[in-house]
Image 1 (tube, rainbow, N blue to C red):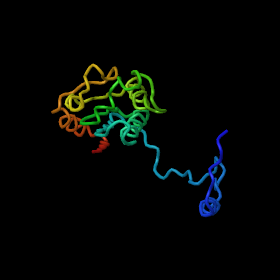
Image 2: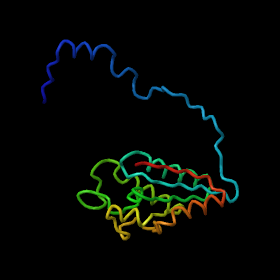
Image 3: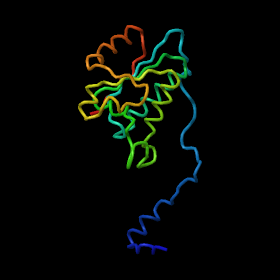
Image 4: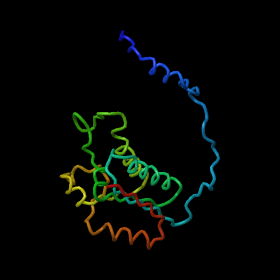
Length: 173
């Protein structure tokens, strides 16, 4: 059994100033009132997401996938377009020490969420140029991801805007 570290008087004082945990697990510290209506899609409505965020460098990419899935489940025709470094989110070859193995909990959250999104009828596009910038191969894409030409990013945006899509554009350096 490891020995407890010896603490200075100031370290002990600092630890004792605020009791921990200050609230027992399960305590509510936020209200639960939803302010806006739970909108559902009307006939023909579309939700389009652009993702320019690196997998696992922030939560932006993962949250964008979850939002697109939620929109799809509300009845929106839903599509996600990954470009630039965002293209890395579409790789089926993620894992360590071998593909498919999670080196840390949640490593495959993006992969599994994209598979679910596709299985539920969503379209996922991935820019070939974004893949090439990072040495990723087209054959490394998650099954069902549609590879696209670099010039398709702008035209996809025009396509979905003309359809009247709600457009969620995420961007990360």
